[in-house]
Every structure is written in C-alpha cells, then in structure tokens.
Amino acid sequence: MKNIFNTKGLSSWLDIADESDFSIHNIPFGVFTYKDETRCGSRLGDFVIDLAQLGEDGWFDDLPLGNGSVFHKDTLNPFMEMGNESWTSVRNRVIELFQSANTEIRDEEDLHAKYLIPVADVKMEMPVQVGDYTDFYSSIEHATNVGTMFRDPSKALLPNWKHIPVGYHGRASSIVVSGTDIHRPKGQTRIDPEQPPKFGPSQRVDFELEMAFITGKGNVLGDHITTTDAENHIFGMVIFNDLSARDIQTWEYVPLGPFLSKNFGSVISPWIVTIDALNAYRTAGPVQEPKVFPYLEYEGDKNIDISLQVAIQPENTEESVVCNSNYKYMYWNMNQQLAHQTINGCNVKAGDMYASGTISGPTEDSYGSMLELAWKGTKPLKMKDGSERKFIHDQDTIIMRAFCEKDGRRIGFGESVCKILPAK
Ligand code: MN
Image (cartoon, rainbow, N blue to C red; front, side, top):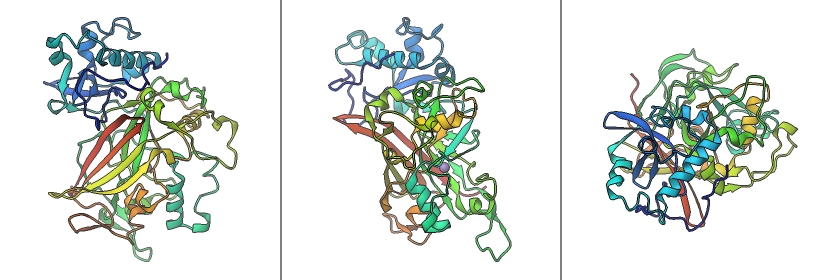
C-alpha cells in the first residue's frame, strides 16, 4: 500500500508547535495508560490520539484490521503481526482525519476530548513485548575508536568487520521504556591485570547512543528476508540507550562476548516512528569497499538522516549536551542487518528488536559513548555545573533525543530518559 501523505504543505487542524517532534508527518505508534486503562495510541503535538476509541467508534471500519479490537491491547505486537498494509492504512487514515481540510472530527468539538488526551495526563508503557533482541556493531567510527583504544590502531577494525554486519544476541527482559530508573550494576571487574579480580559496583557505567528497529511480520524458520523485502518486515524505529558497564565488560567478554555488562537495562523512547514516516529522510550510505556478498547488496538510498543528541543532567542542575551524532553515519543499513540476521534461516517475529550499535560520527563531539567522548577516561568532560565526567555518576540522568528535518517537515522520536541510581 502506498503511503500517500509524504507531501509538503500538509498541516493539521490541531495546534502543533513548529519544533514539535510529533507533526502530522509523523503519526507514530505507542502504548499508554490513562485512567487505569492501557491501550494503543498515536501522537499529534501535545496530544495522544486514542486509537482504541477511534476504532471502537468505526473510524477504521474500512481498513484491514480484523475485528477492530487490535488497539485495545497493552502491546502493539498483534497490530504489528498484521503486516505493512495494515500499518500504512492506519497511519494514512489518521493523517486524513487530522489534516486541516478534514471536517469529520474537526467540526465535532465534543469528539475532541474523546479522542485527544493531553500527553501530560498519560503514562507511556513499553510499546511492544520484545521477544528477541540483537545488538549490531555497525558504526565504522565507533568500531574504529574502540579498536584503536583496546588494540592496534593500525588494525583497529577486525578482518571480518567490512564483510559481516557484526552483532550478538542480547537479552530482551531488561529493555525498558523511557522514564525507568536503573541501578548501577554490581559485578566482577579486573582493572589491573597484575591484581586478582574484584567484586563490587561498576565504576564505569556508560551509555551507548543507538537506534533500534522493530520487526512486524516475521519469516518462517528456514526462509530468509532479502534486503529488498526487509522494509515490508520492519515496523519502525525507537531511540535505544544500551547502558553498558565497561569495567565488567572488559573482564567478562572473552571469549563469548558481552554478557552481564549489557543486560542491566536498555532504555527506549516510547513512540515507534514508522518506516513510512522515515522514508522522507532517506539518504545515501557510505561506499562499501570491499564489495559485499550478493545477499547484502541493496538498491537505493537506505541510510536515514536522523539527528541524534545525548545530554547528561547531574542532579538538581541543568543538562549538558555531550554528543551530537547522526544515524546517517551507519556503515551497515538496517536492510542489510535484517538480511544478515535471517540469511541462515533464523526466523524473526513481531516485536523483535535490533539495535544499531553505538552511533559515532567522525568528530570528537559526535562520539556515541562516554568511553569514546572521554577517551577511556583520559579526557574528562566538563559539565555546566563545573563537575567532570569520565563515566556516568549516580543520580545522573541520561537524555537521548532524535529527530529528522527536511524542507520544513520535522518528525522525531521524543526522548529516552534514564536516571542512574546507586547500586542496590
Ligand atoms: Mn550496544
């Protein structure tokens, strides 16, 4: 189904601030609780659109949504399983109902309070039940920085890196929605290789600035998804803060990779921005040399221009922006990542999540982790309150933001917010 509303000049009869992430060009999907009831919604400006109520009142009657109760759920998984015709049809219909010229709801003022709930009055929930979670390692700047720090700078990238979108299977249970506080993890570390390992609270808690895509309709075990077909399986994207304990990671990761250093909490933004909305911000990716295997080849612009920002807010003071990066720097795009994930016949399902890996840009202020920004602790960052940071302190709040802007059309993801509490 064609996304018919990626056009300039589109506006809504609702009053929406120019700098809002949630313009009529966006129409993301999420799950919210209002007056003790949890259901699926969308967002426009400072209002949550109650999709369950719209469906109940017949506004989606002509759409391919089964019996119409799919939004009366506490996850989007059943809706995502319906496939991209259903997703596109709902987004198109919502845009149609709320665009300036449409009078159907606009002129029925008693309906406004029924369908539009002030965002301040709702609690946002995890939008999906995450079945499986993969973390890729697809930013060449990040992989080069880490390789330079911990290995030989002349061989920073391992031999497989430009051939394989490297990734690992992580843990789904500890992926949480923005606003969830996370306790500093405890674990084993060995900072001094001449000394025995120690046990205690991590001294090197870090963020990883990532974006994640979420699959809708999956594939049958044994089949694979091509780079061309990938977008029919990808529902949308969220901001993904992959919290990491660097000291635990360094000691535990040999030989099977990260484990407890990565699964004490990963924090996503609550609104899933659809591929339909993001398509307007496509841009070319880097030239891939050496040439990739045919199953990883793709056509067209598959990177996306998404501005990314990270700020740290120490307790009781203003935030300091520590990083400005962009999703367009990715070496491997998500079509390639999903093709690689399934090339061996691995089946994916609705609600599965795939994080990009830390997204670092080419300049020192665009690195996507404290490890790189403070270069292994050798260049501490100055906060606005005068304090310094090599890694994250207790009571620090990490705020990640992401948005796209082109030709006066802005869409965004809102924020992923997470406070680090002392170890339990
Ligand atoms: Mn990661």
